[in-house]
Image (cartoon, rainbow, N blue to C red; front, side, top):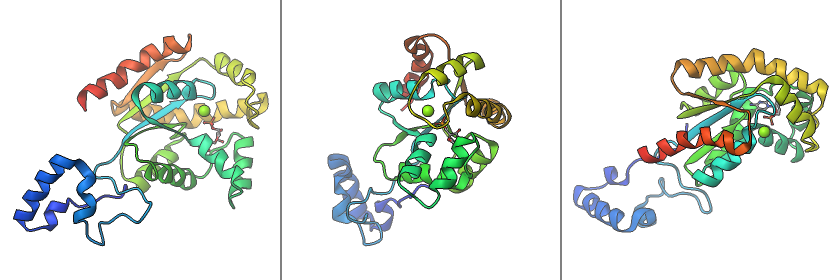
Length: 240
Ligand code: C5P
Ligand code: MG
């Protein structure tokens, strides 16, 4: 669950609550400190709890389908925070965490890391950000990933993007990208594609049935692909 707060006004006598409303209107959230109780006061240096759940976009697609590239464009244009599940796991490896060796082995084999671990890394990253809109790239990779997120976080995503790219194109991109990744080689790539087909496609179907899925044809130039992505987020901006 996202950490939530009770409306300050519901804890106060009505005259004080009405004054609070007026001051909140005038000064926005800066009024917080003046009226907060011990319980509501955020700890020093910590991000205050959210009053409403953040806007969450899951970004799906096979390895090399262009998720990261398009996420960078969405961040630049619409101010989202980009959280790549793979990057969070790789950071865990390089921070010498106790699970680092296990995560590294799973990544080398193209296997899916236990969902609890990935969901907690995502949850921690969201909670330590002040932004209220996130792109969660490469997640959920399986039905189990999806169900674990729902169980731990207790929320559904607002939008799900799926970058649909032919296999030969994905293989070509991954083998030529040269980012020094242990899993960007032909053997691991084969395994990643198998895992994608067997475990990720059911997730894509699940969101499609829920009417949350936006399928993008992920071939062409970065700008051509972004032309399909842009209107989706522009529409949500208008609704805000
Ligand atoms: O998304 P990316 O290609 O960076 O993921 C690299 C690897 O990280 C995956 O092949 C998988 O081993 C692991 N991963 C995972 N669970 C996720 C996302 C990535 O286990 N949700
Ligand atoms: Mg990526």
